[in-house]
Length: 151
Image 1 (cartoon, rainbow, N blue to C red):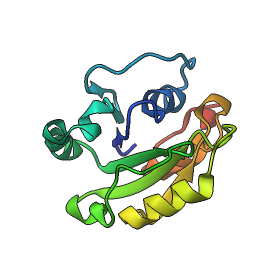
Image 2: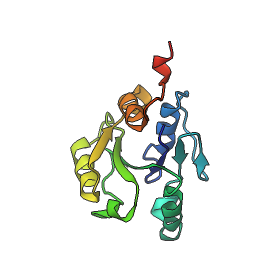
Image 3: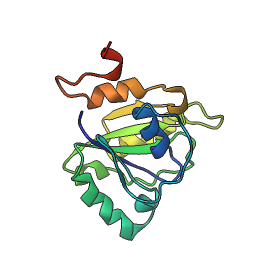
């Protein structure tokens, strides 16, 4: 599997997505520091929300094969500037989260991620496992065996 770093504002769903990708029971907890797992790097939202900490994300991105920019479909604005993906020499994908929330605007979130430069966009509801298999398949490398293929 290719390693992905998840970046996004606080409460956009990075840790919940991490739990879903790992097949764990979903439970909320605030990420306080950068968490390294086998193929996932989960980052605190404050890193992207604070200019000085944001520089650290650029360094952490070098630890991953893919950068995942998360944007909740419930967000009233996007933190990501237009055409920012060209600043990273890694593949960058957009991930729209919370797609089934009452006030979700999935199309707006997708539009904002496309403005950043994301060409590939995933739509996920981590609690319902929607979009998780597609993201895992995208991260899969030739020869990888997925958990559902083991039997």
